[in-house]
Image 1 (cartoon, rainbow, N blue to C red):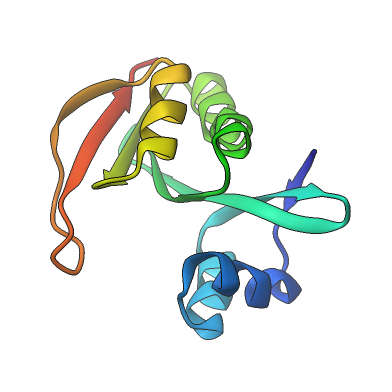
Image 2 (image 1 turned 90 degrees about the vertical axis):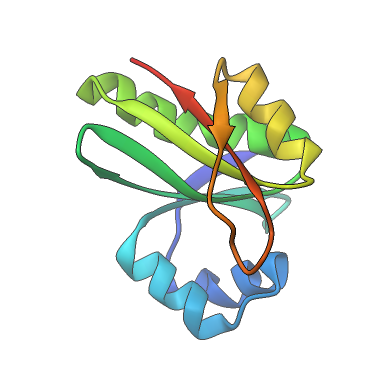
Length: 127
């Protein structure tokens, strides 16, 4: 599996992975750091994140458990270089992302906000 920066042409595939409209995924690619996992010339997952106020915020993570494990390395590596924490909100229930967060050393720190009525769990990894 290779990981690379996302480009606008990836928006259709990102939309397929999330069920979101293509224009939303195009905006995501423009507005955030987005890294895609590619296996056999096909995008199999992605992570998006941004950094503000000494924290890297993972805004989306999609893929299989192994893909999520690999993709979480991207914002964690960035945060370590910049001496920042990383926060991740995991929609309930999403055991694949919870497992990836646990594997990466994140701590569950409480409940997160509701997104479209779906509860989330907040995870944090301090530098």
